[in-house]
Length: 75
Image (cartoon, rainbow, N blue to C red; front, side):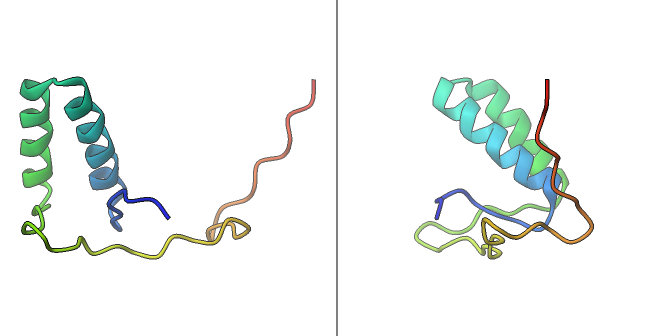
């Protein structure tokens, strides 16, 4: 399992991934902008030491409802 925070909201999940990448690259100004967007969307950082609420990820062989698996590419 990954230690990546998971959420029901895809926009918040994308912003959290973006924030992690920016933080690793040392772009603190951009991290602050992403934090503002997270706050705007109602995301609250978990308290230190507290685990983030995670939703269980689907098993590798499961396709999420309403989606079809992509056909293998042929050339």
